[in-house]
Image 1: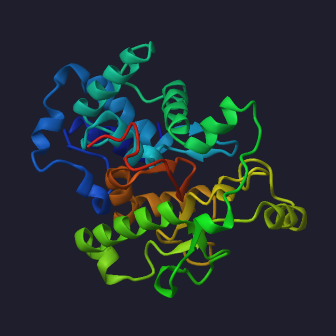
Image 2: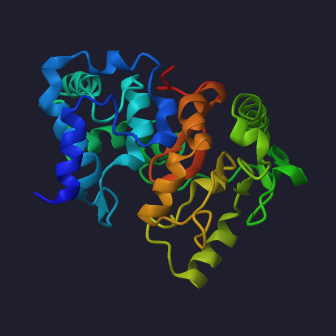
Length: 294
């Protein structure tokens, strides 16, 4: 066993309430002892503490190490703030596995993630519209249903400045709440600015042809941005990487931030649901997003 893995095991056995990094401890309840109280799941907790950093897998086609990037969404789904390396998290995960007819091991694994990913995808209206329509791409909204962003809402890297009016109203309410509730957002006007909203399908197709990256992962041939209900929000970036870089290190950096973690816990209040692969991408699902946990 490598020195790194040995240290992780020792930390888990020592009874730390979470292997979540210090900057992400906002997700862990104040009563950390509650997270370690379910001793029946100690072995699963220790194994999760290791795989949290060391799991080699390909959830979206490229190799990733560990599953820290996805922890905020998983915690939200399980309705727990306990860290990945705690018995309480393992117990909550086992409960989820039981509900969806998976082996109730309490261990995070790719099979469990596939079920989680499926649930998150089903909550995106764009995905279900395509599924129920036999794969047909939805038509864009009439121009009179679109509204303009104001200057303070536009990111410097923006591609478009339009959103469907109901989505724009929900976005503005959500940003006002975030600025009132999250010091990081209040102190940085760039956070939660929009760098992509409604995109005209013809213009998107032309961009696909030029950039040659519409492979269904980096960019979709049939993009949800054509609906006017999808927004790409600035949630931070690594130096010298783009605001929408899909490199694992870039996405991990974004999901560690207070802005993204607030969105995971609160965007559903305003009708927004996430796209798990892109921390910046959110879609308006209606006045109250279904499947959101408190």
